[in-house]
Length: 558
Image (cartoon, rainbow, N blue to C red; front, side, top):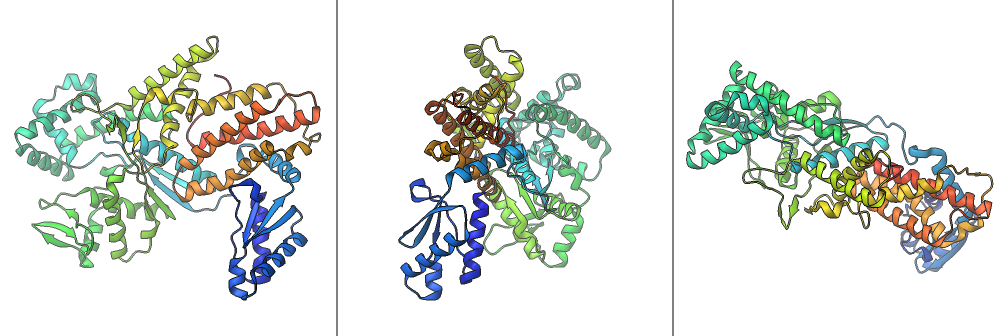
């Protein structure tokens, strides 16, 4: 609603003065609902500022019916809108659209998202959680804004690390143990390889040679690779099912093994590569060189990523491709973008590295057990267990306790991550995540449950509202928040930042709880009661939808 008024004002001024202006929403509500800076008009027409400001004010007063009052303050025309009509229209818009509020029609643009991407033959670690849930949230946000999305789990199922696994398996592997517990045994073998390689560096050469045999199609090694890949996918599926995360493609690095040569030939034909100590490299003026092919002819991560990128451009014709990968890969993606430009293609600006920081415990990278990692499944199970303990304390007789504890536990971990600016490192403390107070996932869920409890078995007559009560500051504060969901959604997509939605939801929840403390919602006056119930129902719709966009399921009781 407010966005429509903004657009109408901008068009009105552009038509009269042929000047583009920004219509702002002042942070201080006392300044008005909207503010128009008139400096650009003054600059173009070379007329006195007060004269222009008064002229603009009159133009708006005569053409924008929703304006109740205008104030000229310095170089701004501040508008106060009719709170009653505005609030009513915004509340009804949310109620009529339900979870589709702020959704956009299909625009037929494709966004590819490369995220999660665990390595096979290793347990799914806490380190892959950030990529998984940031990528999943961005996918949901772009879908809501009308984009077609392609979610890609670019499995780490190829490369020298697999050569290490082969060497470890052949030297120290126990088939029976691996059969009984594939991932844990293979993880142990991988750790053992690195321990032994410290004593005997020649093992690294053996690993490179073993991987080279895989690239050349050695049947023995490829059979072992397929087995390990299948077992790894089984373990990953357990995590994805728990998180409710799905993918359109599981094409990992191995898929591109036969698609790299055309890229290398094109780089050679365009004289973009050179030999350096028998390795093939692309040299840049201001970046370290990118390795394209090893001296033994083996491929590298860069080569496979380039092959994957060109395949995806051809297959999906994306307008954006997002790589949700840790901050430490920044240089890698700068090199990829630069190579695409050097090759003469025009889609380098469609490539985005969505970097993120590390999980920390006590200021250090999150890791336990010498040579091991923190398993994500163990963390999620612990969160669910802690959530159940909290629920037992607050609502011992709750039905479906296990299912609700699962949702609350997962919400704790997901929200604790997504509320943070993704580029920053996060101090990870499960006990704090699961608290029902403060800026936590359970607090948001509980706010929604409180609304659900109030609305239970209540009928709302939308034709019998008290519009005058909407003039009260707390009501209008909520209405402005409801209206602001659209802007937050757009900004989340533009900045690739689910944290904008998380922060918005926390503000919405705290404002509702303030409203709950100030006003008797289920009051005697039927008109005010209808208005209150309509308002909190609109809050719950947006709260639930915002949680969904973060990959979090809402609950009706807890």
